Length: 125
Image (cartoon, rainbow, N blue to C red; front, side, top):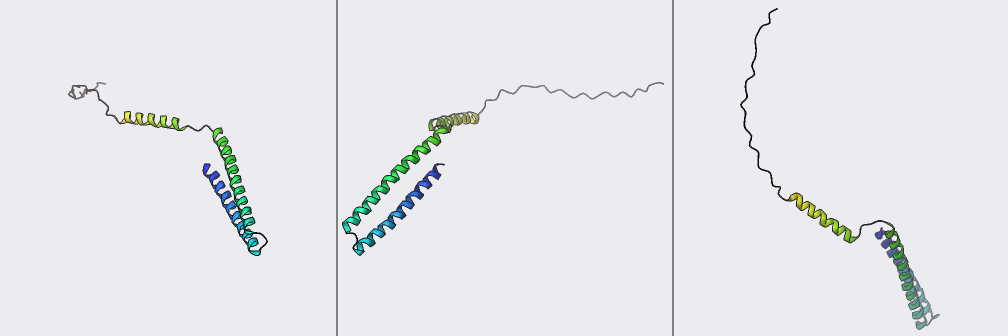
């Protein structure tokens, strides 16, 4: 989201720069034709750039306020909260990776298998 706002600002700055260059070339033409003195042209261009700089700062300030309000309306985790969670995860992972002590094996006695008895007794009818 922040990248979107940055792109908007950079686009705006690009437009302002393009416009300023066009004004600069027009002022230069007027100076060349003698309709403006060089000093007057310089004052106009300086005033224009100062105005653009001021408007750019105002725009960036407003945009920052909007971004702060939008970001503030969401429940994002703070850097400290994320750092705390990372530390807890690392601690739990370390516990899982620690060798587990096994209880000693129980002794079992082996029983010999006894063969099943089969009866072949015949039933008298």
